[in-house]
Image (cartoon, rainbow, N blue to C red; front, side):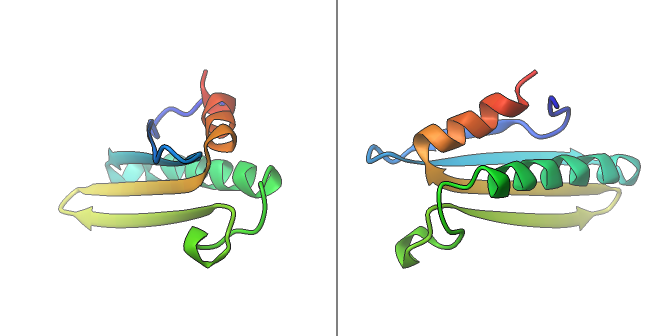
Amino acid sequence: MPLNYLLFDASDDGEGTGTWDAMASVRAAQLPEVMREVQAVLAWAENNSPGPRGPLDEGGAWDADQLVQTEDNWTTVTLTITGPWAWGEALVSHFAG
């Protein structure tokens, strides 16, 4: 399933852990589609988990944070995923068209 709204930017900490940030700003009509993409990404992450989800500094292998903000007629959805570099790259690759 290629993503139509979420585009990931990756950063590597140099120690094998990466962070993937995606953001989409849409009008209300497109919000359900964006949220379906968020849920699909999170489902893939859960199903292909490299270990327990949770803050990495507390023993988690990966984690995700989702933020939804509405201003005027626009809603911005931000999804941040952190985890092992190879795993995160596989996640992004899975959703690349």
